[in-house]
Length: 104
Image 1 (cartoon, helix red, strand yellow):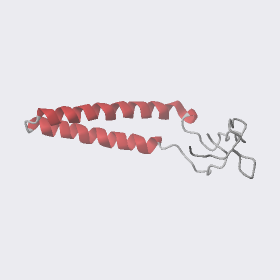
Image 2 (cartoon, one colour; image 1 turned 180 degrees about the horizontal axis):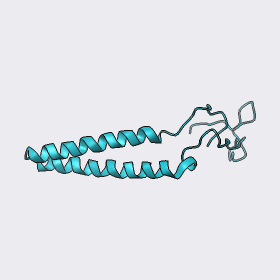
Image 3 (cartoon, one colour; image 1 turned 120 degrees about the vertical axis):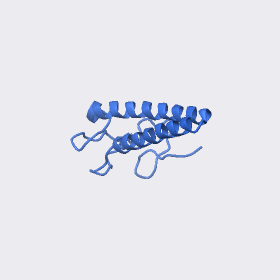
Image 4 (cartoon, one colour; image 1 turned 90 degrees about the vertical axis):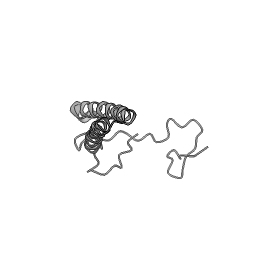
């Protein structure tokens, strides 16, 4: 939940995640090809499976980036109102009246 205290420059990590997924996709494809040419079909299959995971992640990240500010709130998106403990079931509050996060 956003509290309104985020820095003005805060951004979603989708671009770095996209880069990392692309980097992983390239390396796993290269690994699958290298292991296949070296006669190691088990390792080639493992690299191909990881390439499939990286490709799926890349598709999901690109989809989220293209959806726009809903998944990447920018400066023009106002912060949500703070909860102020209204949903506090056990009535744990600090001195400011806000909900206190306690660990069980």
